[in-house]
Structure formats: structure tokens, C-alpha cells
Length: 201
Image (cartoon, rainbow, N blue to C red; front, top):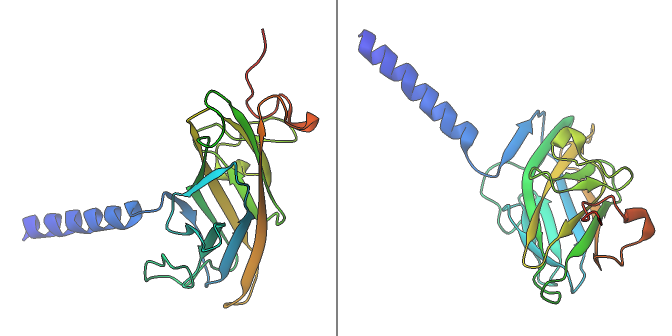
């Protein structure tokens, strides 16, 4: 009898571990009910954007869309979106690659959100806050105006933090991300030295 109880408890712990460890690099979660968020970026032909999460996809118009709702074509079949009065963090939602520029050319990328409830960070410690140059590597440090350097042939994975207010269930919120790339050395003055650019000797 004692062996069965121990095995039963062990089985519950394994099942709990599998549920907590399942998918999507999901950081933390507090929830009440579901709300839908869709974020759409304007595209730039010299920025290679690749979805990493099932919540992100490239639509028929070639635009990166982050949609955490049942309307997402990659919808896994459970959940109805984000819950009111909650915060969600995903370490890797999409990546920005530098494969479209000339070989050997590094680029500086800036990402902004027109909604302060949608912010960005880089768990790989390679994304910076544009105002100060501070590395934003955790969800509690996320900012809605970030930048980073992508070397030739490299990629940077972008995490996102979603803060949902007291919206009624069924509310749909939309926001726009702006993603711009500059050849290293041609970035705007306010970004110089703040995005992880190499320091000159």
C-alpha cells in the first residue's frame, strides 16, 4: 500500500512537471479570463522575421502577426487568449535574422510598440533599451522601445511581455510593432552606442 502511494505521488509530480514544462517557453502566468491580443508589424524588405512560437506567424501579405487567440491559424486547440488582470511573458516569440544584407554587414534593429502594455526583451542578453542602452533580458525589465545588433548571418530572438488590464472577456486589442533596420554606422544618432554596437578602440 505504501509503495502504491509513493508511486502515485511520484506519478502526480511527473504529470505536474510535464504540464509546467510543456511548450512555448512560457515564463509566468496569472489569470482570470480570456482576452484576445493581435500584434501586427509593418514589414521591411531587408528584415528577415521568423516566427518562433505558434502564436506568431507570417500572414498572406508577408507581415509578421502575433495572435494569441483561437483566430490564429496555428491555434493549438486550448485556451481562448489572454486573461484580464494578468501578465504573460514569452522568451522567444520571433527572431530577426541578418541574411538579406551584404555578407559581412552588421545591422542595428529597432523595435517599438505603440502600446505600452506590449513590451520586448531578450533572454539571450542581446536586446537593449534605446533610452539608456541597458540590457533588457528579463520580462520585468521589458520595454516598448528596444534595439540590438545582428551580425551577418546571425539572428536575435525577441521575447514579449503582455500586460492585460481589466478588459471584459471577449475584448480584442490590436497594436502595431514598428521594426526598422539600419546598416551598422548609419543608425540614427539616438541609437549610437546604445544597442550593443562594437566599441571602437
